Length: 294
Image (tube, rainbow, N blue to C red; front, side, top):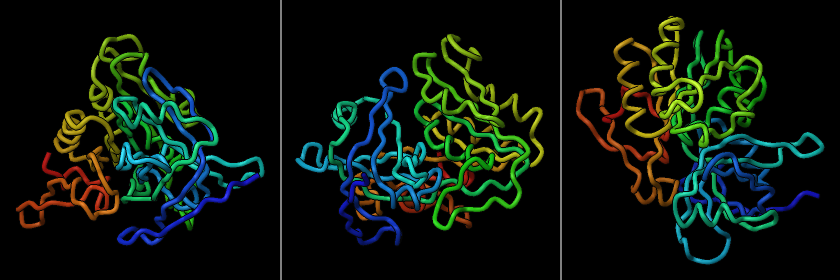
């Protein structure tokens, strides 16, 4: 049986972004200290695209008071094949995420979105995604869309020319932190893993894998990246040196999610060479690397 949700349009958001009171459908452990939650939110699932995010908080109480931003991991369908909701991942690091890891099926939560701009529709021969830690989250949808396995958005986004190859270079501290490996095992996706301690895949940095990919797939390649800022800075520099188009998804702390509080501003380069601030939650979280002052 479907579960109705109450919705309230929040001023200043994208026209399709709404606040929903929804229920938790499932909570599962993905890896060490890493969890995934499914929530029943059909309208959000219908409108969201890979790289966009939403804010979420408990439906009652005031501790924590503010919502937290989470990127789409993927949408899911009900038994009739209809879009039913969204799934997202997180690492348990503080009060809010500890509480979320204890949520149970049927719990009520508040969620608002979709927010931000997401990754662009792929327009390249070789799409290379680079992820560090929980930064792999947005790339399940990116990969499935690029490979023609799923569509996202309303109306559904269209890819005029699909990439000849789609890769994910995924770096973590150790194999214990590899999250979503089963989901990323799909026909057409070249998944390569790097671990800091050598416990799985390449012993070293994920940027080593990127350099190897660019050595053979540099022509008309685009790079999408999400993860810790030092890693993204290194990826941006590699792409700059090789004249590769690169987009970064920032993981900036946010309070409101729709541009009112200006707590998530980041420095960007203006056309005249000067710099200014942009709101990560509205103008981002995805920016071309050349725009950012890292």
